Image: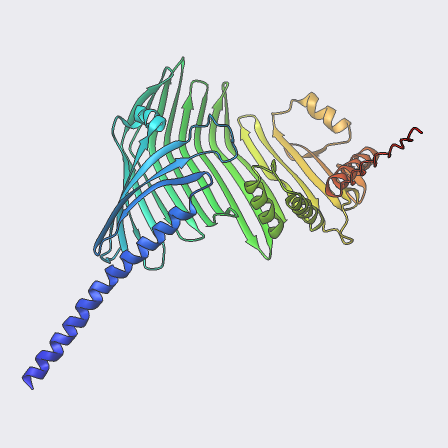
Length: 442
């Protein structure tokens, strides 16, 4: 019985040993397959893998690959692509961080090396670490040391910074934090403090997700900014894409004036998602719609037509700011309703509205009186307000109906231009050459 227990324990240990070897073996085989497939798929385009030297191992794999970064839309023979080499080392032993852990280093080559060495120093590399999570997420971190360099008469001082990238087949998140960036020279200076960038993309191809840029302070010879925040958000819902960009500044000092709590919000909504995808794909493949096939041109026209007939909105929902003299707020929106008959008709389906309010002493008494006397503004507590709206062929400014003939004519002309683009007239066929009748001489 004792021997049976010994055999059982030995069998269990043997199975565990085999399982322990199977995990790194599978990890190594998977990496070998994926990295070669990546290199094969990257033989053309903007980022080209020119060389790959991969050494697969049971517990550890290493290798190098060279990249060329070029502009595939620039066909000039004189183009010199940026080149760099990547060295990597991958551990196939699983850990709490993930199924694989890796270290990497980037070394610029050729002319690129000469330009980069001015910044990071001769022979230095950019390096970092990362891991492949059990759910397929790739996580990479990089630390950039302090940088001090000069270029074209300007000196730069950049404090150490940190960045991280998390990505899967579709989504990606990039985070970067920088303490201070100082540039001085040519009679000017800029001091930027507390920079943070956070890109959280749900779909990298479509660009859905959020991007946030924050800067604690910016100071130049003429301008001082405190609390700058820029945020964009793009969402997709029910086959519609909407995007909003907001900018805010806590304090802006320029030309002896101090402005507080500045805010701007711009938006575009209701875009037909499939049409947007089609335009993005063709625009990328054709170098910005410059080199399209006949089929691609037709697809672009169809996508634009769908965008304009399915409805959308664009504008500035909010614009505000203030100073010692008072406050200003404004808004402007343009909406294109869905076309019930599927035809472009801006005069019929376009509507717009907006308003401007000024309070305090930003306007002097004579300016206020002039605005009120025109009938296009009305008095509000502490200031004046003007508003307009255009809908169903009617133009109103502060509830006063005006002749909208010029607006209707402009929209009608725009309809003709759009129609000419969407449905160009076919060029007349070249006239058949008249046959020459040559009489034979008798």
